Image (cartoon, rainbow, N blue to C red):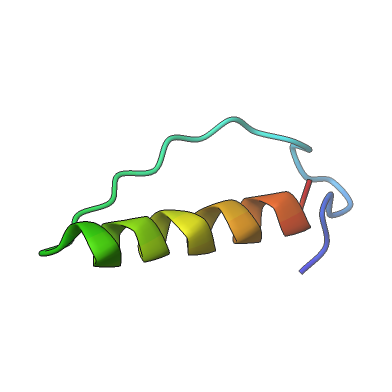
Length: 41
């Protein structure tokens, strides 16, 4: 997936809502989300 596709909007700020049954699962979900975002700058 390209960081900035031709004709795209470029960097767009977003908010992510995360819900989990345990704090451990929530932390892992947040970590995966940050990793995904950081990989795409």
